[in-house]
Length: 347
Ligand SMILES: Cc1cc2nc3c(=O)[nH]c(=O)nc-3n(C[C@H](O)[C@H](O)[C@H](O)COP(=O)(O)O)c2cc1C
Image (cartoon, rainbow, N blue to C red):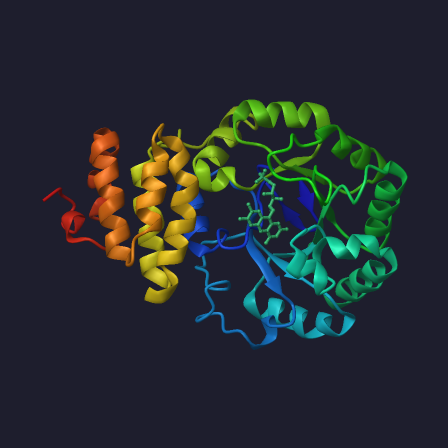
């Protein structure tokens, strides 16, 4: 799939997710392979110019995290030039405009899905962004406020006309919760209306889901959100089974995923930035076990990274000794908090 001058192979994109899509999760995903385009979480265009790449947990990244698309949360024309200047400085490979976030706080500030209510404002913003960069530029939208094909299609054609290179459609209305079945056939309506690549997003948790989504949407690519944290090996499975990529079969092992994630956090996040991110990630990873809520709850109540690590290891030892053994094999190469695995062996 072509995203301006970027070749996205396979056409599997990581969704921007606040609190989740940071350097540690991206590094974990890269360890399995299969991701065509990585993403940051949404970044406020207003604060971007004054943030430091080294200090900000939203911006920190390693050179291996590529190609990386930066998602911008824009509210006003005056924010465009300084924000784009910052993104060029950070070495963004692409820029995504958040036009779909339904969070009341974001809408109140005039950003996210509030922008879809005002196509003229979006036109002006996109025009400015397009004039300020030669980088690949995408927009991520929901289906709108109500099901209105004409309005949706006109909006998407306007985006294409203003120079958007790729469109991601989260197949739900603005007010619909994640528990609602996504409306993949509506992505097909967008696809039929524009010539730029269209990526389908929402509700893809397995290879079967991905196949059904592609069938129903005819999309050029898929964007995976929550499943990236539930099953970080999913991109590799999709890349192999749907796109025939010749990459190693992923090691489906939650303790190993947990170890790699914690290690990446330790390596490049300040201590006070680690615990919250471990809690957020564990909440998702825990679905891999029938009694995973015990894991999520224990980590949730931890007061330090060391305690979170200890209670997670206690859980894994009770429920997944084979997984612990595999983590043990890898532990020597990881930067882990507790001393039990320091030397690569269970002490
Ligand atoms: C915790 C969380 C944070 C999110 N943050 C963002 C965000 O920063 N920007 C955005 O465009 N969408 C955000 N989303 C929406 C996702 O990008 C995606 O559209 C949604 O989760 C549906 O895809 P999925 O079913 O694969 O998870 C977020 C979703 C979750 C669950």
